[in-house]
Length: 146
Image 1 (cartoon, rainbow, N blue to C red):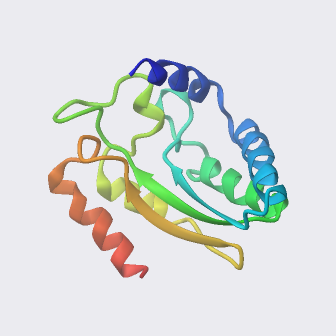
Image 2 (image 1 turned 180 degrees about the vertical axis):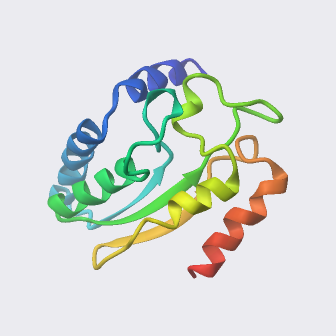
């Protein structure tokens, strides 16, 4: 799990603007290699400390905009990430990922909009990160949107 510490360090410095820049560069490389679409498992939702941005989907919308600029289609799999582990609250690094409850995740994710190059989907990070009693909320959200 040592890779996680490096990932947390990088994630702690990302802003919507830097996330956009990195994603655009990555997606442009993909497009140049002939890849026409990406499925993005997206769970970096909030500002450092877990505070929502004024636009609660600023990070996800940065990925959508980056894909559009790079000329690649995106399926943004907005990912529910609520806990650090079974019955463990998110640690200080994971606060950026967590909406605290599946209902709060669904409320935020419902604000995302697709378009001609964007599909919005749902995912759970893992069974350890979404308590069993909240899985149905994520599944219902996805089912309601086909």
